[in-house]
Length: 412
Image 1 (tube, rainbow, N blue to C red):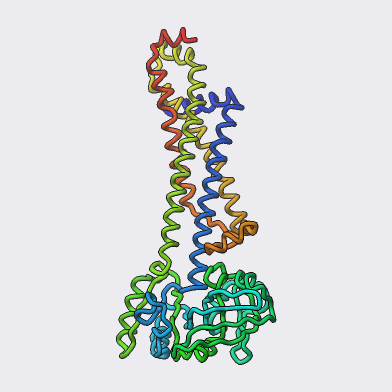
Image 2: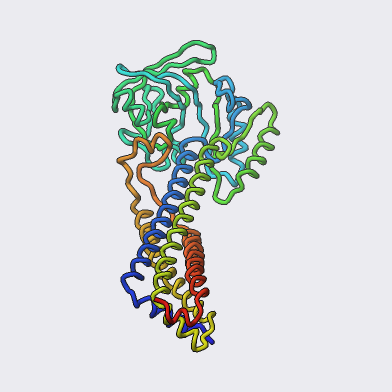
C-alpha cells in the first residue's frame, strides 16, 4: 500500500488537537531559529575578529629576522629592505604588503603614563591594512614626522585623557642603549578592534621612528595574499626565495601560528554550537514524545479496533512516524525561515552591541557584529530535527505494541 493514505491520516490526526500541535511546532521553530541565528552570529564574529587581527596586525604572512618573534628585541631588525621587497613584488599570489618598525616604549601625558607599542608606518601603504575600514574615531588617518604628529588608540587616549591637538611624550631605548624621547601631537584617534593598537598603540611616521631609535631597517613585513592562495605553500616558497638572497636571515609565520588563541576560541565556539544543537535535539525529541504519547493514549481504543480488524501493526507505526515527522518538519520550516530572516537582516544592518563595547574591544571583537549565512546551518538543523522526530516515536509505539487488541479496545 502506498504512503499517501497514511500521510493523509497522520496529517489530519495532528489537527484533532490544534493548540497542542501548534505549540510543539512553535517550540521546535523557536529553538531551531535561535540556534541558526546563534551559529551565524558566532561565525560572523570569528570572521570579523580574524579579519581585524590580520589587517591591523600581522597580515596573513609575517616576515621577521630570525629571533625577533621570540625576543622582540629591536636589534633583530631586517636591514636589507629592498631585497625582501624585490621578492614580494615579483609574487603574483601577493595582493598587498607593508613594512613596519615596531618597538616597546612608554607614553605619557600630563595626567597618566603607561607602556606603549610604538609603530612606525607609511600611511599610504596602510590602505589595505590598519586603514582598511576607516578606523578613525576623531581626526584623520595621518602621521607627519617633520611636525611630530601621530595617532593613538581610542582606549589609550581615554587613559591619557588627551584629544585631538594635545601633546603626548613617548620614550624608549634606542639601539645604542640610550633613552630617547620626543613630544608628539595627536592628530588621529583610532578604533581598530585590535587590542594592541587600541589600548597601547602609538602610530608614527616610519622614518621618524627609524631616526629616533636609530634603526636602519624594519622589524617586520606584513603580507596579504590573494583569495584561495595556499597559505603554507606560499610561506614555503617565500622562505626559499628570500633565503636564497645572500645575507638574509629571516623567518616567516602565518597568522595561525601567531594567533593560536583565536583558533582555540574558534574550536570552543564550534563545540558550544554542537552542544547547543544537542540541547535543541533533546528538547525537540521530548516535546514530540510527550505530544505523541498523549495522542496515542487518547487513541488506544482506535488502534485496538484497527488491530482487531486485521490492520498490520506496521501500518499503525507508519501513521505515528508520519505524525512525528510532519510535526518536526513543520517546526523545521518555521524555524529555518525565521532563522534565515534574522541572519539576513542582521548581516545587512549589523547587531549593535555598543553597550558591551568596552569588554568586547578588550578581546578584539567589534561592537557591531555581522552574522554570516551558511547552508550548513540548515542542513545540520534538518538532521537534528529529523533524527529527534524519528526517535521520539519509538517509546509511544513500544508502549502500544505491548497491548493486545482486546486490551486496547477496553483501555481506559
